[in-house]
Amino acid sequence: MAVFLPAHFYVLSLALTQPERLDSLLQWSDQPVVKFAEFGLVFLLAVHIFGGLRLLAMEFLPWSANQKTIAASAVAGAFLISTTFFLQAI
Amino acid sequence: MSSEQEMLDVSIWRGDAQSGKFEQFEVPAQESQTILDVVSWVQQNQDPTLSYRYACRVGMCGSCAMMVNGVPRWTCRTHVNKVLDGNKLEVGPLRNLSVIKDLATDMDVFFDKWVAAEGLHHPTKSREEPIEQITSDSAERMEANAGIECINCSICYAACDTVTGNPDYLGPAALQRAWTVYNDAKDADKQVVLDAVSGVGGCLNCHSQGSCSLHCPNDLNPMNAIAGLKRATAASFFRRGR
Amino acid sequence: MLDIRLYMLQRITAMIMAPLTLGHIAVMIYAIQGGLSSAEILGRTQGSVMWFLFYGTFVVAVSVHAAIGLRVIVAETFKMAGFALSVLTWSLCLIFLFMGARAVMAVTML
Image 1 (cartoon, chains in turn brown, purple, cyan):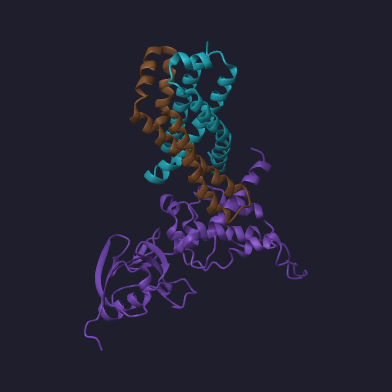
Image 2: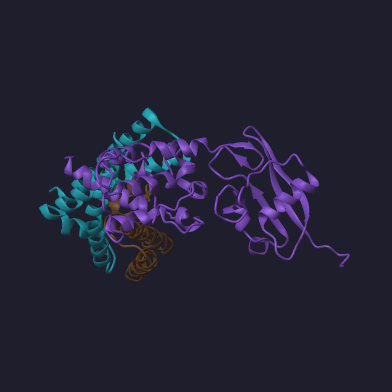
């Protein structure tokens, strides 16, 4: 994810200087393999976010045995969001 | 009497802090056998130079803790048939501690960190005053209860990946003890405890992976204790200003 | 930097970003309907104070969060420490901040 970030920022800034390049990059990103990679990325991001929310819950809320349930639903939520993205994106 | 004695293929780590390797031994399998039985058999019958620790051999002192097939366990409480991989076993010294010889590790660092986490009592009263009344069902007392059965066996310390990655990290046992002291209504100096556990090696390094609570043979929950310490340090941080 | 400060920064930027990220994904799902072009993006974002604030905050938060997160990973995996570690952390933060700010300006400035 950390490697993706600078790339993402760079591409967007192309809008300022070289809009034609941005357009051709956007067309390139319509390819299925890129879509698949984006799906993977969003999945990882979702896992990261829900794992983080689980941490915040454990550290700042007085929950206990719920932890395991929450961890499980963390992955579930992650999958749900990434699938939605993928389906919409095709 | 069967002539065909089944043998276990046991791999035991030999060496010291500088170097070492796994040595193979063939150990007769018994119907009911613990890992400690296996290690003792090797030392008594095959190689008297094997060094290992045990004391009570009934699962209450924690001295026999070792890595069994990569998992930290009390060897006197681990039945061979529960962990056998085919007919193979791998026994090694506890992870995250430096080795003195073979299966005996140097526990100094563990105890130094125990002390560094300020797990000691700061008295409020002298012996002349009446005894402080603590109810056994107060929230704080129940919170402290969850961690006081720790016998310093170091299994949580061996299980923790953050200890492996961060040599300054105080570790789950030391932090859990600090949390029990923090929850002691009789303790006078809770801020000292918080300061001790929020430094470079402190509770904030915990990633909440939970290996400590998973492997604790006494079913304690250091991960929870550390989460409590994080809550306390965060609250103190906000109270004292950014 | 003191450890408790790094920890609190990490947790706080995380809490800021949780709703921002979900919002961003929702916006993206909407935006890529029927394909995407630079003209489309700019048509929506140029001159918008709201998007500037939204993504501006996001960039600041993620620069801090990612720099601290990478700091921990590098320290634990590669055992880097001390001055070298701090230099790496700050460099990462500034790189993300600079590139992100450029991207935000690229799409929101007129």
